[in-house]
Picture 1 (cartoon, rainbow, N blue to C red):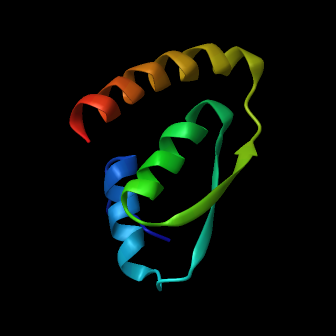
Picture 2: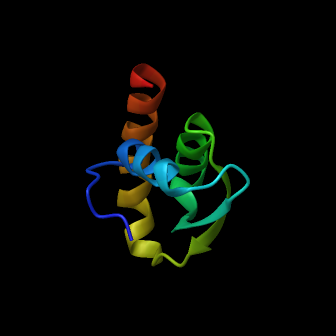
Length: 78
């Protein structure tokens, strides 16, 4: 398990160092984060698919707002 990164982009960069060329990974993520995490994997040449972790309805609103900000950062920065 990787524990050095501080964000999704760093996590995918570090994970890529441990993968072989044909390795595939499964990302366990919330549905609102799925798109961004798959894009980060793609940017680091990681073949990935995702599986949605359950998220309580109450928490979904805050997570979705946070994800909108994260997506804006993704588009601007990376």
